[in-house]
Amino acid sequence: MALTVIKDTTVLGFAPAEVHDHTDVVITDDRITHVGPNAGDGLDADTIIDGRGQYVHPGMVCSHHHYYSGLSRGITATIPPSPDFISILKNLWWRMDRALDERSTYYSSLICSIDAIRAGTTSVIDHHASPSFIEGSLHQIKRGFVETGLRGMTCYEMTDRNGGRDELAAGAAENVAFAKEVDADKKADPDGYLVESAIGGHAPFTISDEGLLMMADAVSQSGRGIHLHVAEGAYDVSRSHHMYGKDLLVRLDQFGLIDDKALLVHGIFLSDDEIALLNEKDAFLAHNARSNMNNHVGYNTKLPEVRNLVIGTDGLGPDMFEELKFAFFKHRDAGGPWWPGDFLGAMSHGNELLKRYFGSEFGRIAPGYKADLVISDYLAPTPIEPENIAGHIAFGLGSSSVKSVMINGKLVMENRSFSYDVQKIYADAVQEAQRVWERVESL
Image (cartoon, rainbow, N blue to C red; front, side, top):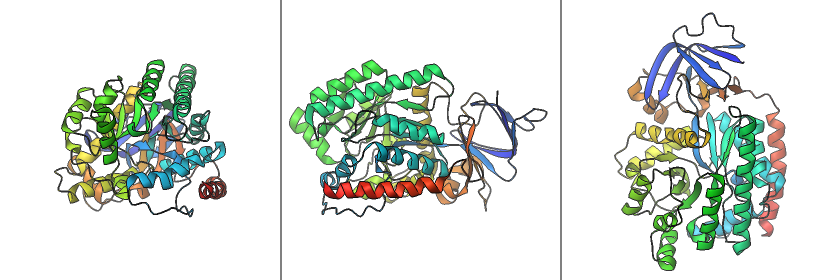
């Protein structure tokens, strides 16, 4: 049994908003067991952390990421003019994912996971694609999670855009095989396993009805839910009406794919009826403000209507402090009614999604919750109170304040240092990125 005590710190809660000064946090193995003034007194702890002048708060959850973008930052391959969203996909991202192989997939996961920990993100829900390397790809993503100690979920995005039915079948097989691998991990170590699985799909406009049947079968076999882009661009909606004569979510629901483990992404052009269906099924929708702005796909004005709204980055890094800021400022610029606390609440909904997959409690510094937490050394110039925690995040507290990170009861970053050679990993990633960019150039 491993016992850790964080002494005399200030505990911040996000959902609900809480501030507790001069508090001890006691962690036994993977869970928080006691929280309160002097709660650690007299305990024979393995590790004692001086929390004075610091803040302990829940780790952030990135509810939609693309680790396959990890080696794309600053890419110098020739990208043709891309005047619309479909051309952005074809000219950049669908070339980038085809250029990935086993080694580059692993390095993408490794550096994205380190970046997440540095930013105080303790859980990442990934959505993977590497059409030239499908079988075994999710295991390489898992390696990055496990070797860094980051909690995560991943899936393979089923699509017919490159290889038709055979590609769909290969994606389904990889999702099911990885779910079985995760089941074995969970059986071997129910409290210690870090990586879960979902059933991935690219978007309805690249998945035939036969492909949706394959997804439904994979969901049934695995007991997981889908992770799928929907209505990111207007074309997805138009094609569904043209080819199938129905709304996107109606089409998905007819295959039994909308349930309480389903994670849909973007949803910019969903109708009112589709939002109602999403809420009725208790499914999740991930909002990705920076990506939507970057791709110039529009703004989702229906965010306040979504019951289970979560926040992701869509591949633009794992810094959820930054993502929350962009989400709030874009919303205000669009005339929306929400304040920072609403977006902090949405980000915290990612913990409910984790609960439905991992079967544990996440997102609070409280007894019984998983010890996924962050120690920040933010120097506050004004009082921090429950009513203004989100305001401090929107206008001050950020990833630069992250000092130490604990995931599943283990310190994966301590005093901004790792137990392994990060510089070497990043130097190796640079070399791997150059090889990937050369392959992108040739596609």
